[in-house]
Image 1 (cartoon, rainbow, N blue to C red):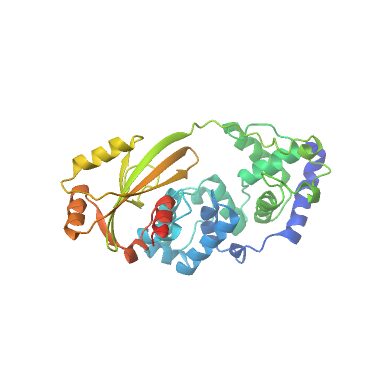
Image 2 (cartoon, rainbow, N blue to C red):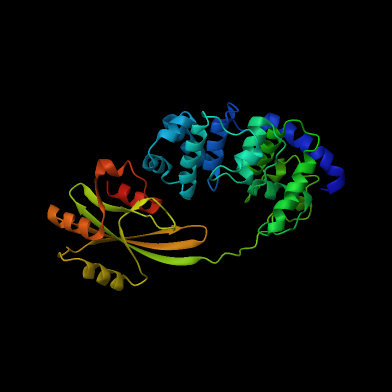
Length: 353
């Protein structure tokens, strides 16, 4: 698509498409900033279908920002469980408390929205434009994909200069658009339903005759995104101490993945023998032979090999001794449902329920 000749028609064509094809998403039923904010936070790093399910759970339990602010943090984590990137849940609760103190009213300007915990340029732009029609333009993975393909932009989107380049382009495309919120949503919808990362629907795309990537056989190449992060391999050995219907768990409180979520007793070591030796050195009771189960967890920059060692203890006093030694908390099966666990542990618990 020629940058100069096509820019004037791009936004009009996009909005015309959006009017006919926009998805009936639950958070589009109103311009309530609470619902828009909640949906945007949930949908970060989350596929739409999964995100909608969690959005509905949150709205059912917390219909407004005051209800969310009053909630216990562990309950928020429990409902968030399975979405990953748990710092989002932590900031979600923090922001709810701040907004609740402001009589439940979200800031109406981008410059104030971006000061809220967990709200970055994209989310602040989305809320400001959709709810308050402020001229702020979103730039996210969808926008990078649609615009790089349509206009043949070959800048590596991992580079810092990419944001400014794409932001400048999308703002120029929408220069004469009155409803910026609709324009932003249209661009995101198009990237999420037509201009897909894999198997994009080029045959039915409204821009296929002018699209640079389609005409130059570069659909699978654009946007350019070079991998810069090295994947870190980690090895988690979880020791599951269980007595009848009770488990010993501990909250992760250090600055690491899954912060503030609960887990079993953990020894991080590639060598299973060394991990078990370390465990036995720390305790005074005799443990039974454990049941062993393997799993794994893949994060954006970490690959975690997980081993579970399940110890079925017959004596309550042994559980109490371990609880004291490792400074853990004892939960029964009904209590386990009300706290947040990393997905890999949640899956383990479900397999033993």
